[in-house]
Image (cartoon, rainbow, N blue to C red; front, side, top):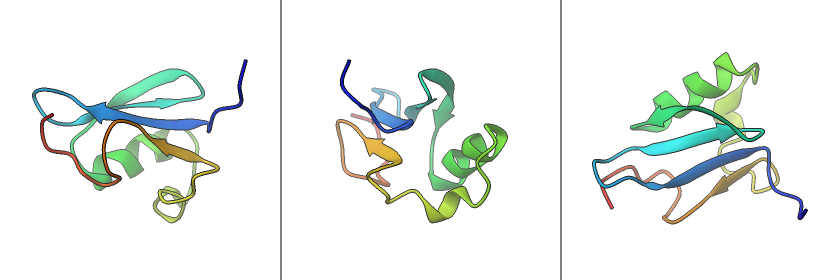
Length: 71
């Protein structure tokens, strides 16, 4: 299996927001960066706001990073 960053922000859903997975586990549907940071904090990642643009840790799929509107 190919290596994948531990955090994946999936493509925007038709209703808006993006599903977020941490180490393969769904942690929620984020509507903005604040939601994303909170999900990551709950998953045990302190200072999550500092890693959102690190491609080694976070993969933004199917859309531009930090964009949350409906697909």
